[in-house]
Amino acid sequence: MTIDNFNFKDKKAIVRVDFNVPLDEKGNITDDTRIRGALPTLKKILADGGSLIIMSHMGKPKGKVNPKMSLKQIVPAVSKALGVDVKFADDAANASEAAAALKPGEVLLLENLRFHPEEEGKPVGIDKEDPAYDQAKKEMKERQKEFAKKLAGYADVYVNDAFGTAHRKHASTAVIADYFDKNHKMLGYLMEKEVNAVDNILSDIKRPFTAIMGGSKVSTKIGIIENLMDKVDNLILCGGMTYTFAKAKGGNVGQSICETDKLDLALDIIRKAKEKGVNLVLGTDCVAADAFSNDANTKVCSVMDIPEGWEGLDAGPETRKLFAETIRGSKTILWNGPAGVFEFDNFTAGSRAIADAIVEATKNGAFSLVGGGDSVACINKFGLADEVSYVSTGGGALLEAIEGKVLPGIAAIKG
Ligand code: AMP
Image 1 (cartoon, rainbow, N blue to C red):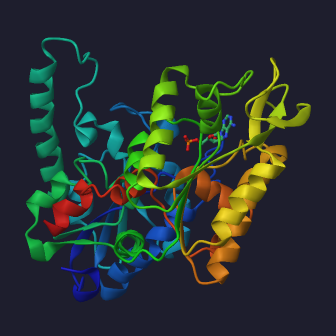
Image 2: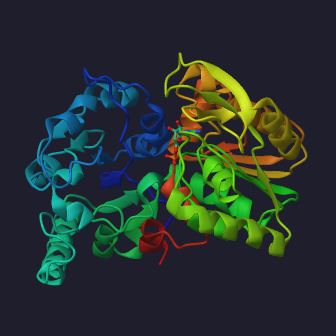
């Protein structure tokens, strides 16, 4: 079933969205991209004459109630975005009456699902090494099913529009789908768009294909890096990873972020790239700082020769040129992870050079996909989000999809 083919008139729809929006200390939303992303699905259901039960997680409360992560804080913003006074259920597991009372056009937002350990389905307060862990996990899986069944009982139809959590087999993202037949579960518009963007990258690769992987660590990106090596022509590795590679090659990286236990892995990546004929592009110079601060003193130096007490926080001018040239000649581009500590205005040049080159390549006909929280924040900071082909709301989910993994949230609906 697709959302376009379903008439929601007089139906109650329970919709999993990703309203895990960033909040400031006062609970104000600092970036509402995720709310805006879900609007087409939510509005279609209301326009058909259906009623909505919206569910989401926020942050990582680890199965406990935490008012700082309460979705109650976003009720005014969601009400405004939908043009409807949104009702709120302060216990997601106890909302049967509120759901049953909904009339067409009405909206109920459930409290943060992750206040319940059943959502993630992981036992809490017990160590993995504990002999009782397996039993606790089994019990929790049963409780997860009960929780999912309860959520399913609120509605006639289930819609999953939360791409950001599609790689998780949680109660609301996957298990719940077992309680609806195939004509009463579907992906929302945002999900469909995300899935199509990934398909675009994977099924019809126009070459050269360049992937730019940045961020802080090699260890969190190794799966995707290895997988990409079978697909890409150019692989740019930047950001904090640069220094693990430089150190592995015998360089001095000063105080730069460096995973000393991943040096062999870095050499392995270099070797594999050679074997597979992938053009691996690593930074040659960097902007080093004498403190991890926007106001630190800076100097440009080779990534192989960073003085003691200094740390590389951004790509240097030679590197920026190298990256930009590689990107400009590409026809398919994937960007995940900044090239420097872009949160500090004085260390955005590397990421900016990448973003500008992607925009230029896109103008020349390339398909460009930018994904992952930090790269999206970065492209938004530069005001360039509308000038790339697609900005994904998924971080981990996007990377797993590109790795070719089947996402549980999608499999649960499509089978
Ligand atoms: P990740 O979550 O692994 O995608 O990493 C994103 C983070 O990496 C951002 O917050 C950046 O500030 C950080 N980052 C990028 N380059 C560096 C660097 N050279 N040193 C330290 N952190 C960095």
